[in-house]
Amino acid sequence: MTPLPPAPLWRRFAALGYDLLLLIALVMITTGLLITLYNTLGLPMEDRGGIERPPQWVLQGILLPILLLEIWAFYAWFWLHGGQTLGMRAWRIQVQATGGESLRLKHTLLRFFAGLLTWITLGAGYLLALLPPRQTLHDRLSGTCTLTLPKPPKARK
Image 1 (spheres, rainbow, N blue to C red):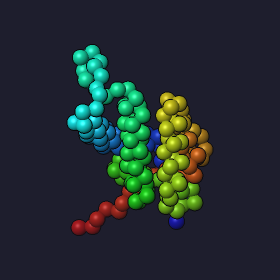
Image 2: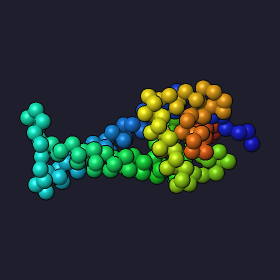
Image 3: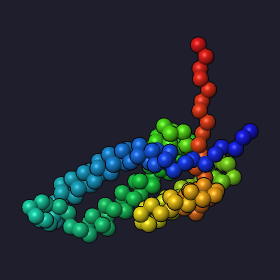
Image 4: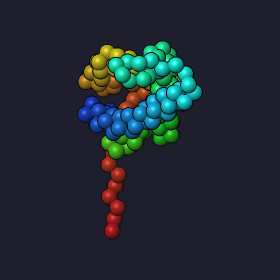
């Protein structure tokens, strides 16, 4: 069996774009529900330019960690169940452990936090995919690789 080639950057970014659409919707729903719940409970709001909103400490200390947990859970669930998010399926790429086995929970945690490091550095971790073995910073730090899957065979009529 021929080993699968590493996924090129353009394919990774295309899959990420698809996934971002889902994540933005998920984050908006969660944020709306949490702020509505906060307001419904009658907890103190602050006025910022005529807009009532929860205090900054609530947004940074409660909402942000919940959203990060939610985003990790989104990716972890897909990676643990087939190694592909919806965007990765559309662009025929898959993440797996470097030995070829399925990902474990530790891989998802390492990959997620290494991915955050990649984003904090304004995407610099993606540039490593231009060098052999053609894997990003989050691939390398988590012991995973992102591969291009072959086209499925055409169905005969």
